[in-house]
Every structure is written in C-alpha cells, then in structure tokens.
Length: 217
Image 1 (tube, rainbow, N blue to C red):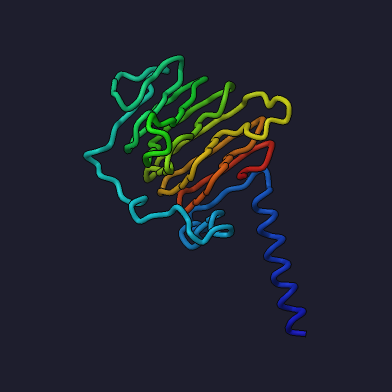
Image 2 (cartoon, helix red, strand yellow):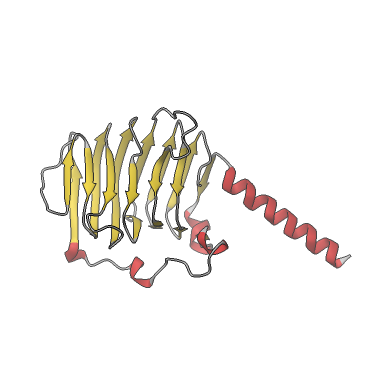
C-alpha cells in the first residue's frame, strides 16, 4: 500500500510540473521563487552554468542606456543603436530603462562566445512586431537582473510564419539566467514567452508570462 501511495504522489507531482511548464499563461510570484529555485537546467544537467559571480554587480562598471522617444543619447564602443535596434557587442553590465516602441535589443558579442553579459532591467518597456524584443547569441551566458521594485514589460506581437518554433519575446541561443527583485511582464501574442535553446535558470523576480504558445521552452 505504501508503494502505491508513493507512486501516486510522484505521479501527481509530475503532472503538476508538466502542467506548469506547458501552461500558456502563468505567473511566478516572488514569494514562491524566494523559497524555490525555479531551474529547468538542473533537471537535465547537474553541472549548471550558475556561478556566485552571477549575483554580484560592480556599480562602477555599469553602462547605463535609457530609451527616450525611441532614441538614446549616449554612445559607446560596447553597443550600437540603429533602426530601433540596440546591439550589445561587448561583455559587461548594462542598465536598461525607458520605452522602445517597435524596437529590439540584440546581444551579439563580437568575440564569439567569449563573455558574460548582465542586463539590469530598470523600468524598461519594449514593444516589437518584427523579431523578438530581446535576442541573445554568441555569449558565454547572459544574466537578466530585475532591478528592485522596477516594472518591466516585453511585448512581442509579431506574426508567426510557417510554424516558426523560435518566435518568442525572449529568444536565447546561449545560457540564460533570470534573477532579481523586480517585476517582469511578458506578452507574446504570436509565439512563446521565453525560448531558451541552451540552459535556463530562474532564481528570482516576479515574472508573469502571457503567450499563445508555451510560456517557457
């Protein structure tokens, strides 16, 4: 009897986890994440990409970028901005704020797969109908940090063509971590919420995802 009851418990837990992963819309409340490491990668690979350095920031090294009326008034060799697309080209810590309409952020390092990028979202709002609001490639890993008490919104309403499996608000081809004590709301009208083709770790933040496809893949 005990073995049967234990089996039922595992079956129930497994069903709940499956439902949580594939539910198109769900929220990760802060009080839940504080007590539970929401970590997809651990289930597949014990050697995760997580490091203690992921949770430390040198404020002197922060590169601030603020969108004002779809423009930024700063220049740097670490990034470029053209045609409503911010391209981050070098590793470092970037604090992103403001509103970007019909635009995108692309993390694409010049030194292929050689560097860690930290993106601090501090009241950032992006809307895009042409490509992911945030796309990541050619990094060792990218860490999204939700600034404490910040409200951040990523809205993707692009048209999904030919069953495009990569259509999503956040598309990462590299290791990705989400953490912090702020709020992130993701709306994906024609695709996935977060689409990570490599490791994905979520250890913090108040995250809400609305999507027509799976919320997290």
